[in-house]
Amino acid sequence: MTAELDRGGVVSDLDVERARGGDVEAFVALIERRQERMVRVASAILGNRSDADDAIQEALVSIWRELPRLRAAGQFDAWADRILVNACRLVLRRRRRRSVREIAPMDLLAGREPAGGPAHDAAVASRDAFGRAFDTLDVDARALLVLRHLEDRSIAEIAEVLSIPEGTVKSRLFTARRGLESAMALG
Image 1 (cartoon, rainbow, N blue to C red):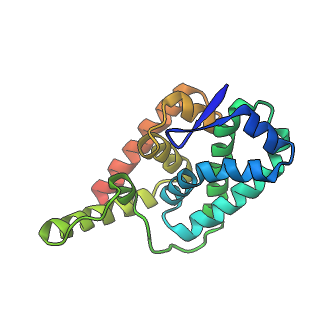
Image 2 (tube, rainbow, N blue to C red):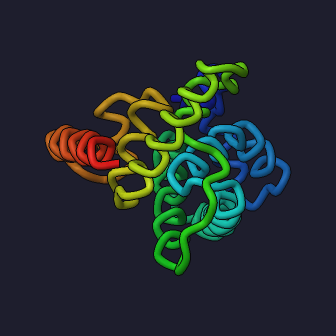
């Protein structure tokens, strides 16, 4: 059995088993294959790279420490994603002040900066409004929206990552989208 990583890279159960056994090189290889995705998810949930780096660092320490307790190597991907989302929750709880948003989710979804001119100004205003609305959501709503729309995960995959039933994922996604729409309408 294998677990898919970064939409193409594949990690075998053997790689996970080697890392579980304390093989640092195997662990580094596992993390290098998922590093880009971890940065993308944490940055989208937390809104800035500095907080994302903190969450990723905490997640990596937890993954390494808890890896021997992972029961099924085939569940590594969902298990590591769950640890990352929980690390993002901790960073948001500790954050006392609002920070300037470095990476807006719209930037991540588009993958590029808009060109200059009137269209640029409208795109910046739209991206800013989206960022402010996204910031009003709680971490669970952010995680759901990021996993579904940025990471293009299925409902089943999200349920596995967040350890909740699929019906709950659907319900919470609906609520998160409504919350985002309402915040956009107010902002």
